[in-house]
Amino acid sequence: MNINLANVKIGLALVLLGLLFGIGLGITFGINEEMFEHYIAQGIALHPELHDPNSPEKIWRYAQRAHFHATGIAAFSIGLLLLVSASNLKHSEADHSNID
Image 1 (tube, rainbow, N blue to C red):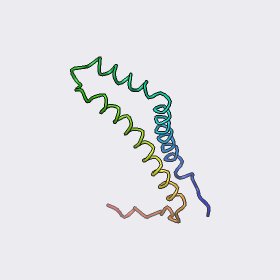
Image 2 (cartoon, helix red, strand yellow; image 1 turned 135 degrees about the horizontal axis):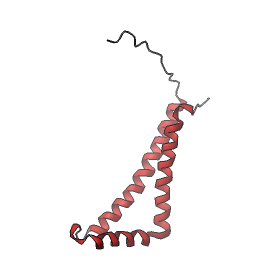
Image 3 (cartoon, rainbow, N blue to C red; image 1 turned 90 degrees about the vertical axis):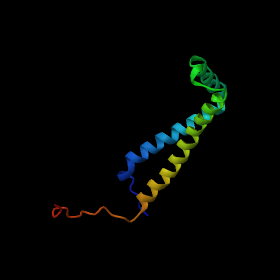
Image 4 (cartoon, one colour; image 1 turned 60 degrees about the vertical axis):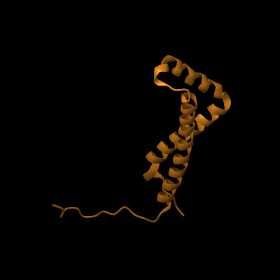
């Protein structure tokens, strides 16, 4: 089987960038979770009128969701890109000259 990645290289680059973002967030969470919690607390302290007592947990959960979604969507997209690359579908040169 011959897989040609030339047609999907831009998409593959974007997907790898998203995957690196998601993995980077996960690594950073693991190494220094307190940094994120402190950053969230600073933001809440700057604008207390915008937040309720549950804001720190909500904001932290959204940061975790960014990590989960970035890695999950990127991994699924890599699979789709490789499936498209390995498929036998050919680009058709349809005649569009008779379209009014």
